[in-house]
Image (cartoon, rainbow, N blue to C red; front, side, top):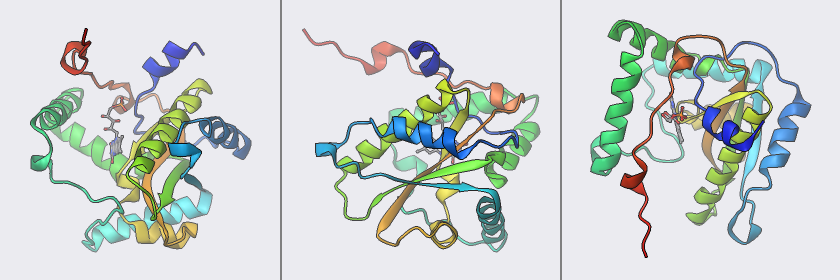
Length: 218
Ligand SMILES: Cc1cc2nc3c(=O)[nH]c(=O)nc-3n(C[C@H](O)[C@H](O)[C@H](O)COP(=O)(O)O)c2cc1C
């Protein structure tokens, strides 16, 4: 696929079909993403691909934790919405408004978003990215570049993705089922698969005007 098309057509998919993806395809995507830059080529990332029964067990354990009222405790702390910069708050508010209005009614939006959240987007595979606990902040930059390269490489192969906090909100479950060592920080889960032709997946988020974020100083 042409590069610009890959970049512009990537968007977060929240309902995947149950079509399987073979290990070789995923491996090829990860291998390509390993070309991402990192501080002094430290390559701090690791990837744990959850599929099949382990992924089913993760989904069940998350539902149980939620039902039992267990407080999420992702490895990266979550900052309260009101503490973000005003600009970020405004963008997040705008996004919520747009996605809700993409549906017929608030109830429909709520049902679809809850279904996506509870079922971890029905993804057939979730790629869990980690970095060592012994990492500088720069490694977060590195793993972000790695993550985006995974998502673009996936798109190039006709696959869709969504990075989620939702899939890492109970890290103890992930450590147990995926054997993730305690000296690694679980950063994000990237759901990957084939997109379902559904209303929720037809939503495409907007971006700020370029002049609001880009200053060309002469
Ligand atoms: C670190 C991170 C965590 C995210 N967590 C979630 C999540 O838990 N649930 C969700 O529906 N979307 C999640 N997203 C997806 C964002 O909502 C999405 O990237 C953003 O709205 C821009 O839309 P796009 O990816 O379709 O371009 C997350 C994105 C990032 C980068």
